[in-house]
Amino acid sequence: MTSPQHHDIVVIGAGIAGSSIANELLERGQTVCILDSASHPASACSSHAYAIAHPHVGRGAPRLLRLTRIAFLMAEARWGKRWNQHGIFQPNKKDKVFNRDDVSDYLQSLNLDEGLAQALYANEAMEACGISQDGIWLPRGASLDLFEATQDALSPNPKLTCRWNTSVARLEKAPAGWRLIDPQGITIMTANKVIIAAALETKNLAASIDVRLPLRPVRGQLSIFSINKHSSWVPKLPRTAISGDGYCLPAKKLPDGSYQWIVGSSFDEGESDLQDWDTSDDFNREQAKGLLDYEEGDVSHLQKSGSFVGVRCVAGDRLPIIGALTQRPGIFLATALGSRGILWSALAAKLIASQVLEDDFALLARLGFAADLVAALAPARFFAGALAAAPALGAFASNSKPILPSAPKAR
Image (cartoon, rainbow, N blue to C red; front, side, top):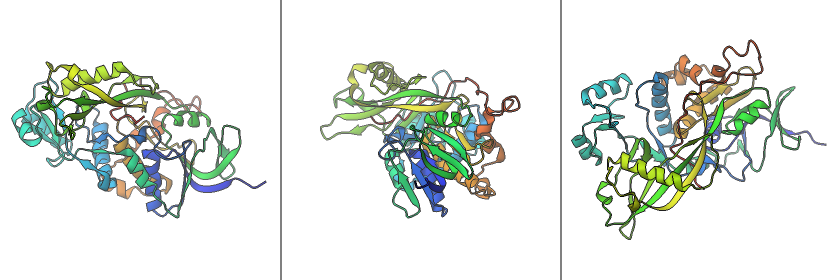
């Protein structure tokens, strides 16, 4: 009987995160094996075409603000040829007073220059992007087809091995690295280093090596609306993306004069149902009124013509889990990307490649990636105070509300 094949580096999960990490390692001269239980890459949440990307500019959570700026620049550089830059407008919340000078000062404090973020009064926003609301204009905001970006990352390479229809049920320590074992208990392969980028399934794989992760699903539904060319909504439809309570993409005029408009997303914490829900479309219709500040809009004019449903993986503290699982040497995690898969996967590619290759982090430091940010993402943040009592088990994180999926997968 032949021994299982051995690899130096194996990536479990061929979505946008796993493929980005694999691609970064390939670019750095490494030999990589990537595997997935599906018959092709980007089969789950990474299959959809309407993910949006912009730096986070809300109040609070200073590490999140710093991280999303760094991650946005990494994403922009990584997917330049697929980057659909149309700008994104973030309206001021209706119950908040908007002072442009104060907001501009705040944006500068986040190291966001006017090329990245501009505070605008409604008349200025109308001129800049066609939105007659006070708010923040993010001119480099973009959308990305995750399926195409994933395919690009895994284009043929002599140092890349792809294994499809391959399910890993558990991991087991081996004399040299780790065994990857299938549901029948058969060893698929062994590896010196294993990178788990398998979304919610990461929880089960970590549990197989006695590590408990605070991961849970959040369902989201994106609605595709058709709007008659004579509808009162037409003059209101945006030519840019809007991100606020929900989000929408620029409206698209069709050959017959009608419009297609994508609005999302509903959210259902703890749900993993991929079926289409009428209630989610109704929720998105209400969000559409808020995004356009058109409360008197007749939602019956937003006729459903399609939808996308997806389940995001989130952690309790709103941040992704990216980095080495230090109490299990040779295991690395990239999960809990929530609604920011574009940003966090680009950041994960750089961070995990540096850890796998045991770099000195000089490149990350030049990008502003300080040690406290590495610690903020590390899996070890969930184990503080727990490992002393039970080294194999980590404590759950806070139960704060997770970020919600603004870019669900295509069904």
